[in-house]
Each structure stands twice: as C-alpha cells, then as structure tokens.
Length: 281
Image 1 (cartoon, rainbow, N blue to C red):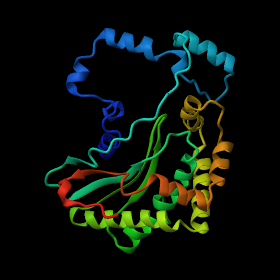
Image 2 (image 1 turned 90 degrees about the vertical axis):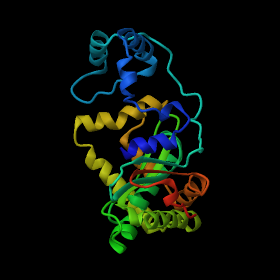
Image 3 (image 1 turned 135 degrees about the vertical axis):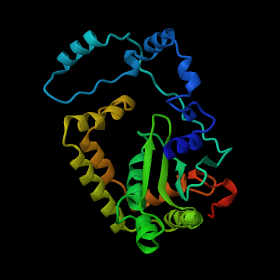
C-alpha cells in the first residue's frame, strides 16, 4: 500500500497519479468495445518491444509474434515532455486507525530511466540505504534500534523518476526517524561521501546485478524497459560501465540538484496525521 501512496503524492496532479487497478466503479464500467479500442490504439508496433532469450532466432520470433499477436504498424511512440512536478500536497497519508506502526517513504522526484544522472542515483541509493553497510541502516537500525529494516530505492520511468527511503517504525519514533534521514541526506549534499563508500556501493551493485542474471527470465527483464525507452541497444556491459564511471563529484552534484528542502515528498500508512510530523531541513 505504501507504494500506492508514494505514487499518489510524487505524481500528483498528473495521469500517473491514478491507480492502475482503478476503482470498483471504473472496472464495472469497462465495456467490450473499450477493450477492443484499447487494443487497437495501444497494441501497435510503435509502442511495443519484444525481448527474448533462448534457443530462437530473430526471424523465428518475428514469425511467431506476427502469427500469435497481430498488431498494426505505427511510428515509434516518443514521450515528448517530462511529467510535471507538482507540490501542492507534500504529505500523503493512508490512515490505519489503531495501528501502532507507521510505514513511510520519504524522497524526491528525480529523472527518467535513460537520463545521464540515473546511474549516479543508483550508486547514491546504494550508499544511503541498500544493505547493512549503508548509512541509514547503521544509523537507524544498528546505532539506535529505531527500525528493523530500511532501504532506499529509485524508480525510473520514461518521463520521470523518484528516489525514496522506505522504512517502518513505531509512531512515537516517526519524527526522530525522519530527522535522521534528513540529516544524513543533507550531510551528503553538504559534504559528499567518501571514496570508500562509493567503491563499496559500486562493487555491491555490480556483483548483485551479475548474480541476478542467472535465468533467461532475468535477462529478458533486465533488457525490456531499456529496449523500449532507449534509441540504441543497451547491455549489461553498458550498465557496469555506467556504474563504474560514477565519481565523488557526481554523487554530490546529483544530491545537490535533486534533493533539497523545496523538493521532498512524504508518504505514510498508519494512525498518524500531517500535523504530527515536521520535516526539519
């Protein structure tokens, strides 16, 4: 649920804010003609990419797709502008009355999957909140025992992206947890990170990615979005090269651009209200 609340706040005022599942009323209102029209409008060659891994040639794949999934030919669909950044509501809450624990995501709007700063954000996410060696795990879990788990993640779309820290804690600890997250993010903005932190994050990211590439399914999943959004082929070798190229200066520069007191969003699930928390920057 927290991801739905996060999506609702960081993409507010745009079509992306809407739930993909819809409402009971909207689902009941769907007609057969709606489905047919959607198929003919959206299932066209310019909006599709077919990625396969295994014992099949491109020609064989093409023949099978044309036989099993006939689609109309169209020009390649291109996203012409970025998703607008709207901050009318900085905090979004899904109330769970009577629950002691509060689940939260705190973060920022960033960039699309193919933006030049996206690899830097991947490394920054690794430094800040991925694994037991990350800054926030040490601060929130090991040193203070305020949370059981904490993680940071990035989401890259075709026209937008987000960077968020996700965790859960007792309601009485929410303000302290948010204060620590803000302090550590601001520390990176002001002072950057160490070369040791950057190299450790790079090594973990590259090793983790290679370990995940164990099945045909994982290779397809890795390439699908990249093939859809990029104009040129992009491979695991390209991913490794982009991560390896990230520098100390890149990390601090990107933090200064995308993180800030006038750029944050907060999503929460729990028995808590807007006026019970403050963002101290």
